[in-house]
Length: 329
Ligand code: P6P
Image 1 (spheres, rainbow, N blue to C red):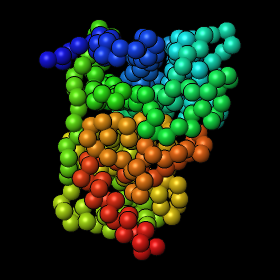
Image 2: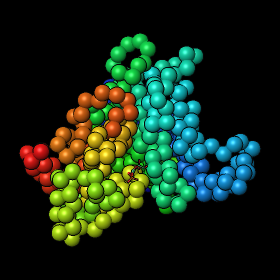
Image 3: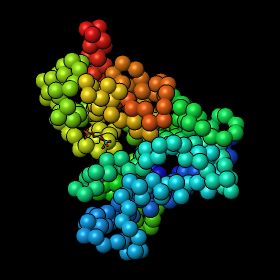
Image 4: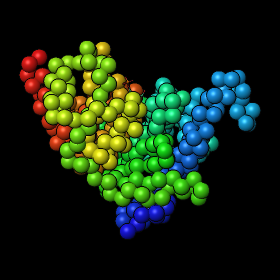
């Protein structure tokens, strides 16, 4: 029983299982943990900082109060850029590729992330999260946008940090899904959920029913069916919170394309793909309703996608309604 094991030790044990590993990935991940702890500290103070900020105060260091998602973005970039494990980064907060400064060493990985998804929920104390995806850089030379445009099935690692009643980090490298809870008193993420398995079928559906008037017929009919079957509606409006609950309890989350968002709202590379990798490793399923999310060939860095994700049986059931819709259209 490894519950309570520090994540740094868990990573080293995982590394030993991979005979050709160089320790580069473990170094990269350890740097990411530092950023996660820094963001967790600031998010947990956020309520106070935001209130002070609105009152025109600056924070205790006398700096202008930054928007927390900008703060989270900077914390990740500054923590990750000098470690020598990356050749570049991509962030929801940055239009283009984030280059590694010339005087810093480079490594064979690329990091994609949404630094603080759902940050509009901070002021009302709802859980928010950082979502990340790690891929290999295959080409030689300067890092360009095309290096990031890989299908989700090529991810090396995917994970998220959820800042809620506790701060948890959940990740996969293709050997199961594992959850770690931050113990602020020791500053360590400790193993709390080893080998998470998503219930085959749930009784929860998560969708913004405010969009009902824009839904395509397949969505309409599927939501009517789950209501008929007595599912409970749970929608936080924070992707990581909705996903995390469904991962542990079972259920389905849907942000499908509709008449208003033809491509869907959520971002493919640093929201849908990481969660899709995790959900499949936990026994669940993720698709657009018509195509497996991890198979999508990206065209651009901030591409949006339709996302139906959760318990395998629920997503398969939902896909039937989209297939019928396709036939009907
Ligand atoms: P809506 C938050 O802004 C976010 O990106 C996700 O965290 C969340 O699932 C979704 O948007 C909520 O969008 O349109 O329902 O407010």
